[in-house]
Length: 240
Image (cartoon, rainbow, N blue to C red):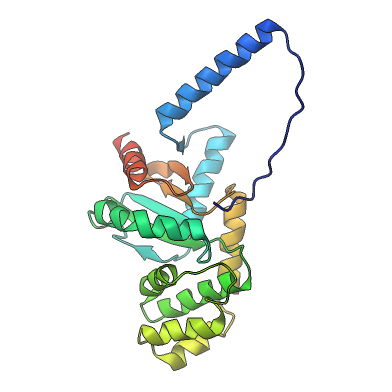
């Protein structure tokens, strides 16, 4: 799993016995909290500064017209940040996404939104550009699926511009239009803004998901979690 977080090693020191008991109690309490929340974090809007930030995050996640699968008026939006060259994203796609679409998107409980968070290199950016170019012809999600279905080792050339053109041909796209859009550079600002939004939202690994519910509630699910975790989060967001 690709992560940008740093590992900090703390030096060991001798602490009094009562300090150890306090630490143990805190650890137990923290474990209980984590179990209660089932591995994801929920933020709700309110009057505090942090809650205000949560509302702003919800607005930013849904701003513009990102590629969306499902009903436009679904009560929950599942916003995925990923990289088409990320093996962990590929693993989640191949084992969990179909169930999520079947159980949450197709039933109208949620919609799936894609935002790229490219960090593997130029081929990742090219893959994003190609997917958006396919989207101009109504084939974003088909291209999205093809990229993950054909994913190989990062930066091995499988997602270079020449091969991406072959993917477009495979989907039967109008190649004159595709090549014009693909090579125009018009998606640069979108790709950069998606990455900046991910950084501001605190992403440390891909895939990371933000579930935006009614009234600006936001649930963060980091990593390739099982589809059942998403169902629990959607229920939590819509039951209050």
